[in-house]
Image (cartoon, rainbow, N blue to C red; front, side, top):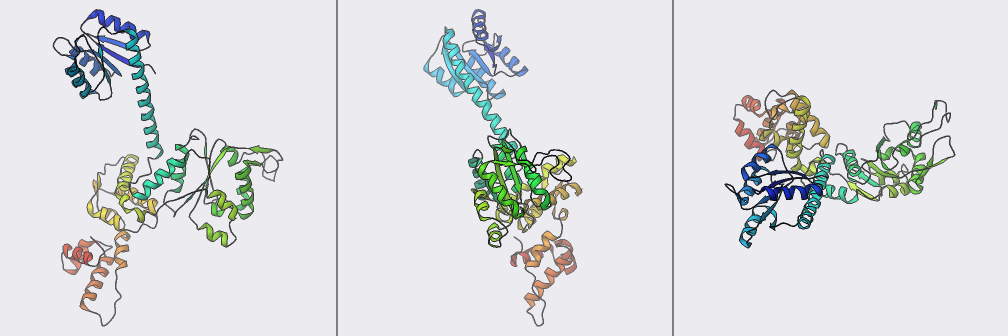
Length: 448
């Protein structure tokens, strides 16, 4: 990469010498003759490297460094002077100078230092690209909880391995998202990511989709068709809901995993492939094995690297981060201006048990953002079942006789249920304050 250098020196001959040396070394150079000119130029365009004299009229090099640092914290600054002292050098370095050169500057010395700077800038650019790519790959995977940090660590650890990965977890926990993260974090990222949902196809089509077929192999085979294994060569094949793979195909899949080769339907030609396999299941495959629905040897081949995703209820501390992410996402998609979620609504989200996991949370946030007429989401923007679910857990049975305290609890919770969890309307109907209802729910351990 060709880096840009701003040369700052009030001696025209020195400037000409530096520009000639730097341009010969392949740098894009521009010279100015004072600190003031340097700041004007730096505000006009950014420079990768600044080579400045220490002693100049009006504004010296030390002052220039401090002002440049306020404009750009990344520019590499090299100080030059014929009056070098240890104190001056230390001050320049503390202000952010990369190095300190004594005049007269020898061409080979300057070229050597700038080659080191170029290597550092190359590495910095690579790191920025890597961080940006990692952010892109993990952009929809949000979490700071301990269990999610473990998931992120495992993704990074196994990404470049060829070993098969088995991702387990309930529906809505993000299994496909993790599979994509593994692929796009790996050295196969430039290769294809091919998906097959084993539960979405009839048994008769799964084999053709996996291995492909030759023209005329069966009645409707009017042309040769490549299967998912061929399409995934040098990339990743993602088999979603592997538990639904027909039993008669499991032995063929096992052979491909072991031998890395297969034949299309209707062909005797063997095709070799380099495919990394990732499978998912929300079923207990050991129970399937015991029931004779899944091959044990295939399970062991697939389960080389097991990765289990927690349910949302197990990582409730991630809910505020996820909610904020989804608010931002659906603001952008729907040109809305929702600023956030108030404490009451967030508390409701934190207490709900989320049977649909992250997918359910995302759907509810999307609906709330689209339908809300206020700029901060409240409890009223979310379905009543979020509150009713909690209320129902503590509902006592109505029976005679019963203690006054139990009757009071029943009446409060039943009224809340009638008004879909709306505390204000329930309080009005009961002739008590909303604070009383909140206090009672806290007493019943249904609210905090």
